[in-house]
Length: 195
Image (cartoon, rainbow, N blue to C red; front, side):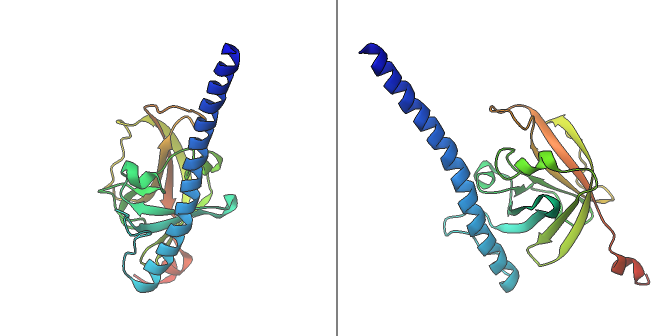
């Protein structure tokens, strides 16, 4: 009798934990559908559209890595609430395509799980909420402590950093971060125009 009771309690605990894991992933997927709609409407109207009425953030960009068929809508800010629904644009960093380093962060097990498959040389396409499209080339990665990234967001280049927790397969939080560094690709059309 006691063994049966222990087995039932353990089974229920396992179901609760599995349910929580499924809930997190389902919420992330549904949020991206609502964010896609809000992002499309933002581009069409030129006004920031919230994905749901109680949202405290709005879409600011879309990240695409076409080789991986990976795409995610980026939200304004990188608070824990925003990161629950999608990647966040880290505060006080420039917009993608502007001078400096634009930094987007997301969770390693949902929206940025594809980062482990990005190869040096892969193209990262960023579409901003003003409709402008910028292409970046992945040119390096690093693993650093969360408080020692050493990124100067106001540097002279035009760069992008995608940041997530490290290691990718960890199940608990830790102090290390994986940074994917990318540089703006000069467009042929822009090069052909006289200064």
